[in-house]
Image (cartoon, rainbow, N blue to C red; front, side, top):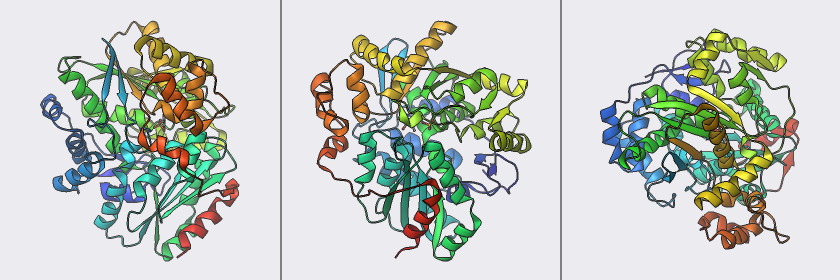
Length: 498
Ligand SMILES: *Cc1c(COP(=O)(O)O)cnc(C)c1O
């Protein structure tokens, strides 16, 4: 199976090339040419496999040049060892007869990014080998909080790799910040940017498209690569947990074979929910994918009006990993729904970069609305929902998951669609203690960030994930910051040294 660019201007390439490159030369994203079918029998067979087996199978559908043994091996290393603190890796929690929570935060950084970033550091060096690339993998990432730490953990001390992470100075939680600034490993670097996530992401994108800098790095043995969710090696592993959730619904008797379900996904860069869409294209029985936005509701507006308009205020919210104005992975959806027409997608993206706005045609919009619904959750509603879900189900959720819960409830009320719905739970509540404590109506006792982890555990009796409970003794190791225009120089200094 080959991959093509969403902007149509590049040659077709293999999965290994797509993973190695991250972003296409024409500025587009790599997408598979077709979606091999996932038959009902295949789903049934997967039901009895452990998570690592399911992941290896799904990856095998897309990564043709990787042998079955190779993929089983990487999946076992990523999902079969001690990195995840739950034997099911991505357990599905039943809350009532049609409401489920898919917990994607049992990995080393307590957020769903681990699901992909535990396996990408194995796929990436292997991909370079397959394309005969001998230079060192130099990973560059922009993060709104969770990607950075998950990428650092994934690549830490992997031979032949270096990783540098930029995060927006005031756009991540205290816990997220300490998780990153205290990162261990000899091949890592973490730098704060004076700006928001979009400044940070634009800075990284500019570095990737800077031919001179790439050349300079390349001549010095450094192969620039991306760990952002635009990389196909991030997206493909995410498809597996949607299939896994469906298998779990089947085996628990929650649904009958072939029955359609809904997924509600707290969305930022549109990677997670796009993986759900790809699972549906494979043939997983999905009725609606509900895209949940926080106050930065550019995606919901787009789904509901067909106009993408990034000319709007940017808000810092209690769900910072969704604070985004430009959702990169949306481009991949546009490609599929516009009949795989790279020219059309190019046009949208040109308009977006010149005026900040584009409008899709009626037919493209109808295609999106066939499967996608969208909704917004305001800041006060996010906190109310945490309290409400805790009262009703005795179940503690984080701020991002709360956005999805509220939007799912609104969707149900508006649509009368009572199909089983899986709310995708993207972070442990202990990662966002400040807001969760506020939501429960408890005083912070003068504490903040890491200091609140113990208090939240006392108040709720819930277990703290080990990597978070160990944070309190750590001191920051990376304290530097740059302005957006200083990012290139910072990359040069780190990647070219020793
Ligand atoms: C990254 C992240 C999101 C948003 O996911 P996208 O794939 O960017 O849409 C939501 N919640 C949490 C906790 C995250 O870390």
